[in-house]
Length: 297
Image (cartoon, rainbow, N blue to C red; front, side, top):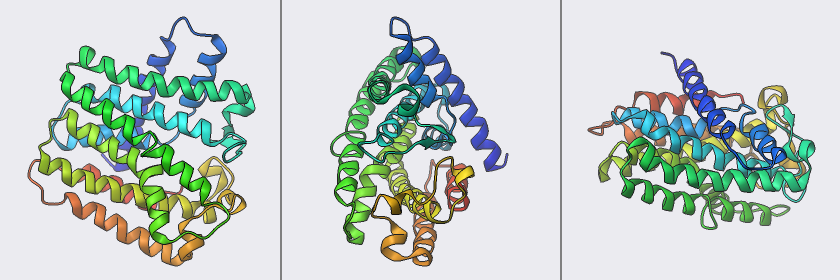
């Protein structure tokens, strides 16, 4: 199966599971449920949950055991997008080709929808041990890792430093630190979640973690490049927003051509991290790295 078909197949699986999870939510205000589902089911690449499932498969594990963690990660990611789009943050009107959550439901309901998705994600991971047979100690370790990757030391802290970097020139080291946390930590957690559910040993887990962080950096560089030269229709949001918001980006710091060169170098580093390791069948993960390198959205 070609990588594009694989990504679509896994994204469809995740989408259906997310639909099932949120359709079954009871005892909550209807406007809150609608707002949660509006952004969660709006489509998107489902890149992070697909990474969870691809990593499980690379280690010969059970994808059904990993699916709740894949869905939880997508809920965390969606919450972050809802909040990033708010007027107090990036003030975006379009996401995935649709009006952003606060444009449809208002700022207060958008904030609360994000809060609810984040909280529900931890509930899904906690219930996974009983519902899918994941060892309780594995589920507990993943819940702890999620709290770090999505929290003050990870994604939230990276977002704060990203805001603090607006309107000034940061160094390359500062920029990579921001994106290591803002983008890389959740991508690394996605790969580590799949690996831990599949029972990876420490050597394989370390190799996959190196792969994930280089992949996360490549993902962010490509995002920055697409914000300069991408097609707004394909991307699903206006291009040029980073420059308008005076954000620190790779093209702004290094120039477009040097950013493209660095993207290729980082992608190769990601691939080399998992080639030749016993117990890891890297084919899909290598294809995903190449897919991200060539993506246009």
